[in-house]
Image (cartoon, rainbow, N blue to C red; front, side, top):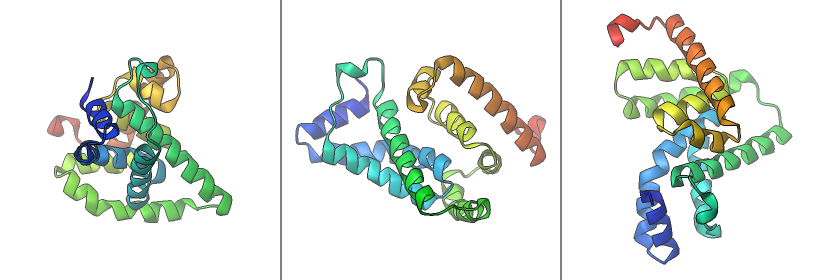
Length: 189
């Protein structure tokens, strides 16, 4: 049983401290994953909070029916569904132009600088922001969150074979974006 399961089951058994530990352990990664959908760090923070609220108010069971799934995979799937619900609701209200999304994405720069201190990581994140949402999501899950292809497939609701192809294409597109940014592989690797 991983740490997330332990914390969650302790919370279900009435241990309020476990709730704090769970949020502390998974909050930042979930926010950055959700940011790949919204391109707005503030919205991603709100969606992460909503994901935890759903988890703690509804207290969905997590047990033997989730064989082979880690707590992080389960949590990120709930977060993904929350983000999709949000995106559907705003698309019904109005169409958001790409320029507005780019403007909103600039708000995340200050958080990125504190979270990612090294210059090459900043360059990497800027290049990732220019990728298709699916590419950003898969790269985040596989390389930043270090999830297996199988776990990423569960979260993104795709076959493992499609995930492998998506990872290959996302890496190729990211390399192209990094080259446009002037990233020097010999100097930085």
